[in-house]
Image (cartoon, rainbow, N blue to C red; front, side):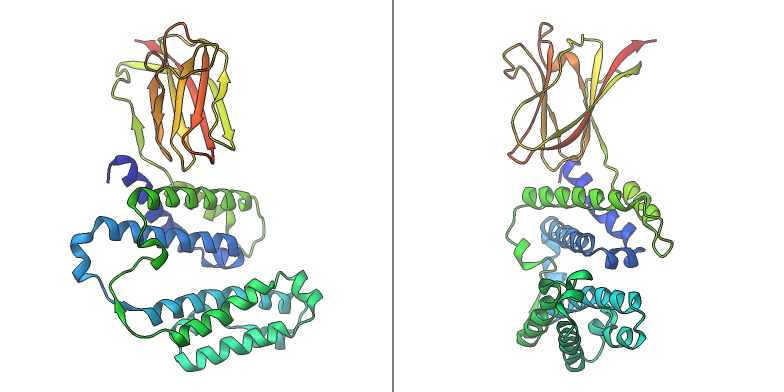
Amino acid sequence: MNAKETAIYNSGHDVGLAVADYTKELNDFPPLKAANVTRGELVDAIKDKTETQDTNTTAATTDKELQREKMAVATDVLSARAVGYALDTKQLGLKQAFTLTYADVRYGDADEDVNHVRELVAKVQALPQTVRELYRLTDAVIQAPADAADDFEKADDTKTSAKAAPRLATLALPELLRQLSAVLLVMKSLIKGQRTDTDKNFQWPALHAAFTTANKRRVVASKKRPVDTKPRLVRTLPLTVGDGQPVRLANTNYGAAYTLTVENQSANDLLLWMAQKDGAQTTPGLCPAGAVTVLMRADIGPATARYLTVQFVGESGGQATVQVRRVVTE
């Protein structure tokens, strides 16, 4: 992998280590937990792609073990929501009946675990519809453990060396990295939205801080960046675009003594250039996805061009921040 790809992979790996200490928060927020599971699958898939020489020594697993993992995760989500209802309504008997943790299902007796999962599903299905709706016990959440239990019973013990999720095995490395960058952006948004939560039962501010530190990317700097200069911040331009169309960011003709620092927070590469009035591309600079890139003004368009223009590569757009700095020589 090149430097940009390695940076994305390292972020995905480090985020996994950082959020591992916050299982309570993950379990309480199913979308975040699901995104983290996807992150882990992508990290494993990328590692598999880059370590093909070790295929023969990869620790063997079985299809049945993979299905049991899915059953345990789905059951944990259902149990957490059902227990929340029991606690909120002060029904301690129901709390005990609804308690079936990830560890209970993942590491107990297999046959008994399947029966316990199905019993939990039946008990939750028996709740009034109004209760299920109020406490987010949706049909999908209830059905997931039941389906997983069926898949677990159907699975065999055939060993496989593939650690990554089967649906990811055929994807090329660039696509895996793109998906990893995208899911990290989703996690960032979900965690950021919870960072002001003051519920003392959870550690959302701490999780936000840990995630932010782990998700930092390596700076990708232009080789032409001056060495003996002190850049002075002139302007900060935030950018959010929903598609891959060109967007005029500023109407100022910055001179040669300026640099532009682009923090591309999206899963797509970004092009930045100084355009003439018609907006056509001149000499766009490439700002890789998930990285910080420093460009010289002289390299992204002729001196007569006055419109700072950006465009995301691809149709989905993204988010970025452009900082304009004036170079002051010593």
